[in-house]
Image 1: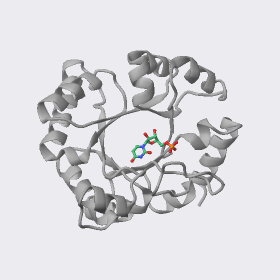
Image 2: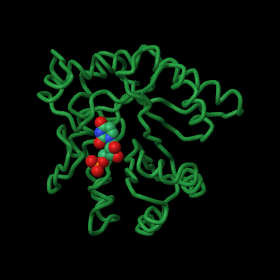
Image 3: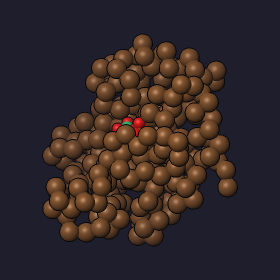
Length: 238
Ligand SMILES: O=c1ccn([C@@H]2O[C@H](COP(=O)(O)O)[C@@H](O)[C@H]2O)c(=O)[nH]1
């Protein structure tokens, strides 16, 4: 099944452990570890989740000169997580460097699976107007996101992070196998919070999503397990 990544946006491991108590079965679950929890707990959070056979998408959004990103990606590759993220706007050389770092880590540590790269296009918290004004971009949002996705595709990324609204255009301009993973997911009854390009799980699936990322709709729900089940149901319904 295509993954639903729960974004573990918590302050510390104690909070994560408390949250995990909501689920009777956690093996093969998919989660996203972001900056907040990784900066707080570092490798501890990775070890805790791997001991539970949970699949990890480590979302640190690397963005720096190519040499630095290559070395950082090498270190992250050693953690044996399934995915990491880089900013596509870091450019072709930077994305290639991230790939090189991950491939080298897999080689040096005899890893059977190389960590995959997802390149962040335009954050789902950005609207088209904000992008055009603040980044001085003269394109529509789908055009700009597809432009960045093509750079990522041509330079070793395995997929992108984008809104589900851009999936079709990206798949048409790259490959059907190129992963479009979508945050900015909300149930119809939810608050959008700081997200601008929002889609519900069912529509994301229809738009060709290869995986969704859901944070607050589950983590802040009164009954997280029920919210997770509702999202899985919507996600898998035709
Ligand atoms: O464009 C992006 C890239 C990453 N994110 C991350 O996804 C989750 C979304 O959380 P919600 O609570 O479901 O809004 C969060 O960890 C972001 O860092 C994103 O939203 N948009």
